[in-house]
Length: 444
Ligand code: ATP
Ligand code: MG
Image 1 (cartoon, rainbow, N blue to C red):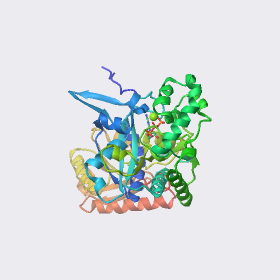
Image 2 (cartoon, helix red, strand yellow; image 1 turned 60 degrees about the horizontal axis):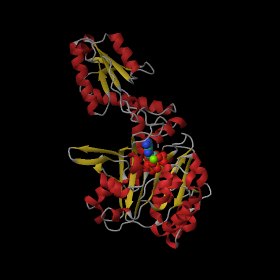
Image 3 (cartoon, rainbow, N blue to C red; image 1 turned 30 degrees about the vertical axis):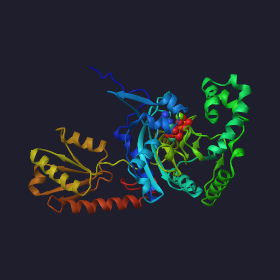
Image 4 (spheres, rainbow, N blue to C red; image 1 turned 30 degrees about the horizontal axis):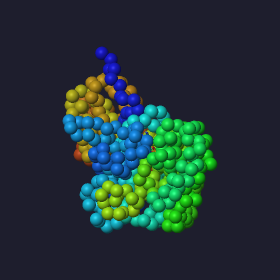
């Protein structure tokens, strides 16, 4: 019977052939974060629903429309729609904020949002994210933005713009909300239903509406930057100065307000126009009030989330390089039981040294085995049969050149193999190619 259970809408499988793409992004992101002093945090996929209501905000799209809330027995919980809430919860619960500040953590997680699936918009998606807690200084904002930029640069993404804005503190925002209400009120009837509600509860969210009609109405809306208090304004000025010093170019974009309620002061997005409407590959900002809101002491903090599926879409589109997938170093073609046993032993020896060794498990004939070795792209092959076992030697064949080297099958086998393998790699590099264990492009 044919399998007719399919994966749920808006989810994706990653098959081994494509896994190296994910490994590339994860490796670069991880290494870059570590070089800025961030350590990995792991935390649960689901949390108490209240955590998200209190942090992401009751009037946001995420909470109102997109959360996966499940009830198991009598307990209700929610699959995380984003990383910050759970990460801060874990930092508080584990006392990290009582340790030396700033505390810096990163994570690679899956997130869940009930959205209409389309390219770059999934119901289960993945994020690389990080949070830095403790510093109120705009230097911390510059540091976090420069880290995100570094990751995108190391992945060699092109045509990505950094948009920054400041949405102020609750004090400046109160005045701004009044100005927005005054601006939108006369055209209230033309707004979408969600925005009519936003106008009452959280008018700044109007600027984040994706409907073209609402965007048109919002075109000349007052900008938050004109309403910033002294402190928020000088914070933003300093951030721009630090970005200038770091040589990071940016666009001040007062339309960036971000989709979650907890942001204060700096907000930013890295945007590409290359994958259609879903162009934000990274979004983040400062949230100085959130930790207190979740029961901690007042601790200024900030962070970002990078959508990995979107990042990979752009990388594929731009033909970016990925870490080469691991390929078979040596394939033993065997004839007969004693040869199979020898292949098992030699493979085990080589794997001890970190090589990728394979032998026949399908009881194929010699010809079919060689065809298979070709198909999997084995770098070397070695045929083992009764003669080879009797003589204690066999020929190691380098598949690309066809060159053969006679080798003794004794306990020096792996040392000799290592030498030949190393020489081959040196030759490959001399040719201007890269060895199969490094990047397909320039090593980073
Ligand atoms: P958008 O405006 O595109 O809906 P958002 O403001 O809801 O994004 P954030 O909550 O800031 O997104 O999440 C951080 C990043 O995670 C986004 O910039 C994006 O790259 C990615 N992301 C968000 N939602 C999805 C989704 N449904 N599918 C895939 N990636 C997503
Ligand atoms: Mg969204």
